[in-house]
Image (cartoon, rainbow, N blue to C red; front, side, top):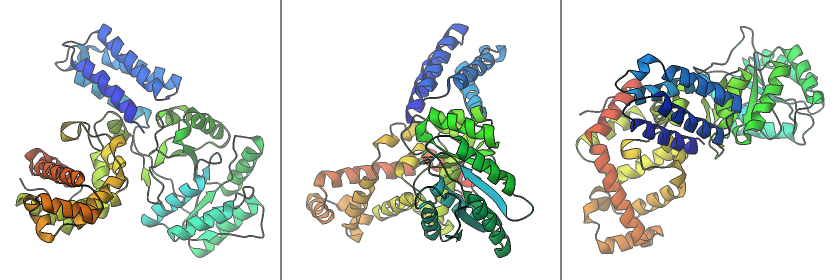
Length: 448
């Protein structure tokens, strides 16, 4: 989502690094470029003004002006201000001492509330909770049936009473059922409208008064930009929201909602949806998001995702092969399979820093279907070819291309890319980076 903004900010900082000394004049030019980049990203005008004013005040301090590396100081100031703009630190869900903890998900129709209920229920279940789902949307055709399908897909219970068409009766009955069955969380999928109206708000206020939810989370579609912010502001005025869940953060919108919504509502972004699958819900980390926006990558999230699909034994085996220069095409294929489990490759690539060997990579250039073709080509090779790719001559390449439904040119490209990857993974710098990051995650360290 932030690819265009990232590119523009990197251009600004590149220009700043070319200055021998930081002055009020060149700082004004930098701030003007940052302002334009944020406005083009659809960030709220008042938020942009407040952000650039704060950066200006800190960047023009004497400590920065007199420093040996003013450009680096300014980049740090921009990053720190971005972190604050996004909320400062991650915000946890609140749970009540008496079960069940009631959590409302509210928002406009089409924002993805029902799917997000399923994602949040899945996330809670993986964290040791026992959620119960209920839909109180008695207006939209098949709304309750849709939640039942979601619940079945994730293997979690849903409360339903087809004989009732009262949102209040459904909510109260679901709470009583959750209490009697030992569910510690009740997720309430509320009704939405195509726009904010008084009838909807009155119903939500009454439900809030009766159930006293610990959390009222506004589900905002990040693709709708400023409309999401205006809706969040209106919901907050009526209901006193406790947090926001941004959906479709993997889309190609400009990202303005993500950068504005916390500042406008005063409420933290607690989760972000980064895909269609039920596992595609992440805790929102302002510091990590700020680093990604500035092209610094998000290695912690990347390592966390890797830790979910790679076992300790697999990690140790890969370290041994790297030490002994035994990384084969079969290993390459296995790495691709593991990477696909982590999510779309464009998401993984967006977490890498825009520096060093990753500088030329762009998330928009990635097509996950290419990975399928790569796996097909490797599957068409013999065991000897996989372990010793140098023996793959012209006739072997033709046979591999026929067997995988690809061209000889594609096979040539695969072998060239594999050789580049193997050289990069043999590099001391790459191993040092992996060693540091694996140390943070308490994984076995890479040997030098």
